[in-house]
Length: 102
Image 1 (cartoon, rainbow, N blue to C red):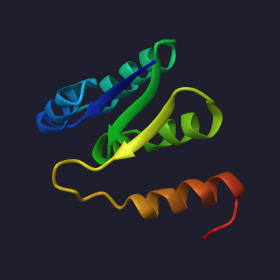
Image 2: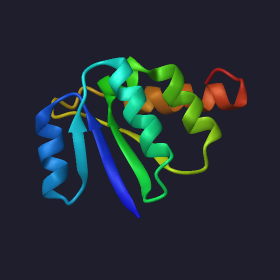
Image 3: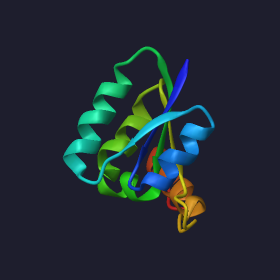
Image 4: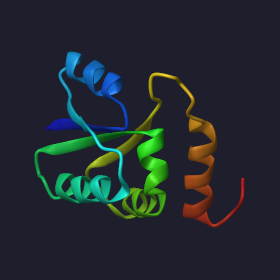
């Protein structure tokens, strides 16, 4: 099983490569969605790491995948600036899943 990183900046991808995780830099929604679709259909990919900005560019699709797919695991990570509000994102996912605002 492999992990893959979709990032909006080269520094994050470089750091992931140093840890043995392949990835690529994509800036446009269409490119992210195309690559994401390829990755979710690849049986070798177990984890997809996406930076906060890439998730925000296609939040609707990523959210749907996270709620409905059992594999691969799609995880939002902070970029090198650490500007992610992961706690708020988790609250939003839980609220959508159970239908109650937290």
